[in-house]
Image 1 (cartoon, rainbow over the protein chains, first blue to last red):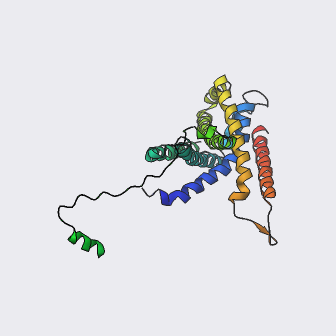
Image 2: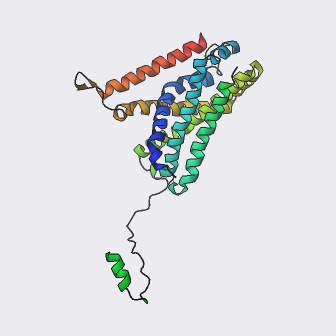
Image 3: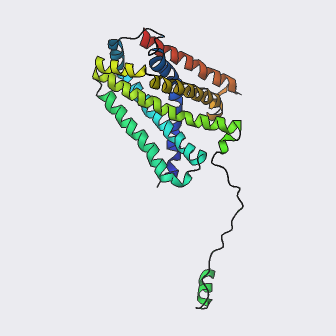
Length: 117
Length: 148
């Protein structure tokens, strides 16, 4: 595999995903998945959310947020398994599962935002 | 050249030459090495935060799908968000994601190339602080867009 030479590429995706995840996920998660379900804030109407999510820039943002975050996960989780659980000998399997998952999530995200309206 | 000479000179009945493999002494590291020190544990928790980043993405993909399908599907999704299981997952995720944000911004000054301003290096604290400021602004913008 030409994996080793691509390490910089994967690291760039990891790094970009790390920035995007750090900046956007806490607010998004706290707002949509904790504050709104617990009734801490006024529940936004479906129409408002649909209108927001149908804007091209928001769809682009959601796509990048999902995809880059997954590539961030793939890289970090891969090394967690290698070093944390000393599973370096399962290198090929872990690599395929992690990046396969990230690619699958990217395809799903692309399908959802592309066919949103 | 030398190798060929040796080969031609070697007697035909010479015993098979086996390579000598030195075995270094290596202490066996426990699989749970990261539980032995606070610093190691923090490192592993930081790495595990990525799992919750992935969990967040999966939930968000379901949210997008529900939003796309219509008001009934979205109401169903919101109903699921109010279940104890969903709330527990999301509260744990929030803790890990915030941990990711803090650790990520704190190492940013070491990860990016040094920025020079009027010949002087920008202090690390300023870079980290500006990252946290950006985090605040972005969070405010998200809340404003959704709740207005």
